[in-house]
Length: 373
Image (cartoon, rainbow, N blue to C red; front, top):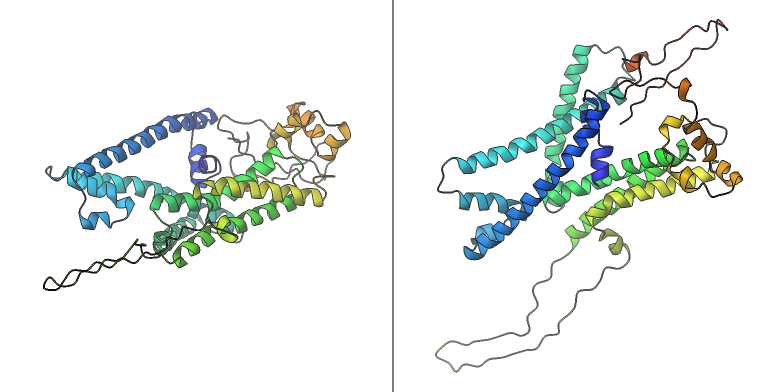
C-alpha cells in the first residue's frame, strides 16, 4: 500500500519532479518515512490517553453513539474546554492539513486530464484557455468528491475508506509498473489486459464488500431468557424461557472474497495485474521480434533466472536484456541532474526531424523522453 502511494501516485510523482535534483527527490523519500512513523506513534499515544481519560470520565450517550472518527474531536473539546480558543485552533489545524492534501490531489487530477486527454485532441489551446480549463476541471473534481461523500459514509471510517480507495486504484497501477520494470517478456497486450483485470477485480471486491455490509441485517441481541414481573399488588412470578444460542457462521462462497481486509487490496490487485499480464504475454508471444530500451528494465528476473538454460533465457527474453543493460551505454542520451534527458526541455519537441549527414533525406530520428526516479 505504501509503495503504491509513494511510488506511482500522481501527486507524489509531481512532488518528485519538482525537486531540483534526482538526489533531492530520493532524500525527500528518506525524510518522509521517519516523520510518518512519528505521526503514527503519536496517534497511538493519543488513543491510549483517550482510553485512560474516558475510563475515568465516561462519555455521554451522544458521544458514545458517534462515529469512531469523531472521538478525537470530542476528546479535545472535553479536555480543553477550559482554555478558550485552543479547541478551535486544533480543529483549524486539522482541516488545514486535510485541505492541503486534497488541493494537491485536485491539482494532479486536473493536470493529468489536461495533458493526457485534452491536449492531444486540442493542441491549439492557448495557455490562458488551458489554465482556465484546468481550474474548471479542479472545481468539477471537487464537486464530484462532495457527491461521493454519501458513498464514503457507507464504507466505514474515513481512514478505512481512504485506504480502500487507494488499494483499489493504486494497486493495479503499481502492478502495471512492476510488470513493465521487472519482467522483460511482458508485452503491451499483457499490460493492457492485466491492468483491466486488476481494475475489474479491485472494484468487484471493493464494491461487493460495501454492498454486503449495506444489505446485511443486524440481528437483535440474543437473550438467555425472558423475565416477566407483574404489578406490585399481585403475586410475583418469574418466568424463564431458555432460548438456544446460535453461533456466528463463517463466510462462504463469494462472502469469503468480500471479507478480504482493505489493507490487502493493494497487494492483491497488484498480484492480479502481474499474473494476468504474464499469462497474456506468454500466450501472445512475449516481446519476440521487438527491441526494448534497457534503461526501462531493472534486471531482477534475469539475475534470478541465470541458472536456467540459455535457450530458456532467450525465450523469456532475459539473457539479451541482462547483457544489454550492462553493455556500452554510449548510444543512450545523457541525463541531467533532475532525471530528465539532456537537451529535451519540452515534450512537444520530442519528435524533431534531423537531417542525416551520411544519408540525406532519411527518415526523422525520434527521441524518447524518460523520467527516472
